[in-house]
Amino acid sequence: MTSKQRAYLKGLAMNMDAILNIGKSSLTPEMTQAVSEALEKRELIKLGVLKNCADDPKEIANILAERTGSQVVQVIGKKIVLFKQKKKDSNIKLP
Image (cartoon, rainbow, N blue to C red; front, side):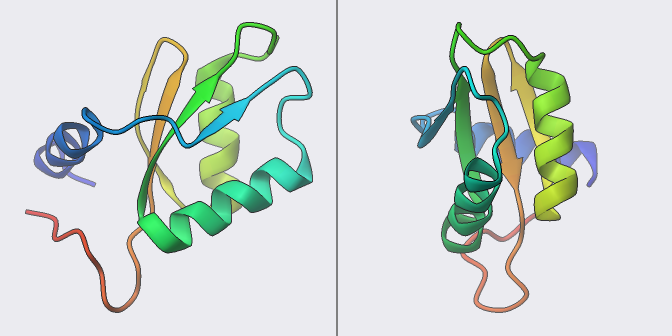
């Protein structure tokens, strides 16, 4: 992913709300499955990491990206933005 594409996706994600929150149990198989399903439908998602989660958000983002086949767009504080482009009928056109 180029820096121009990353900047474009950051701009799209700026107005989004977190659709999933990662809590005390951190990354369970169910959470990974929910993230994967959300990526299939939306392509670009924002996740929140709650204060009671002991894991580092950057580590969580990298693990989720690896498990779901997505890319980490950004991690700011306790917010994670992931992107996975659909093979066909993509809603997001990258520059």
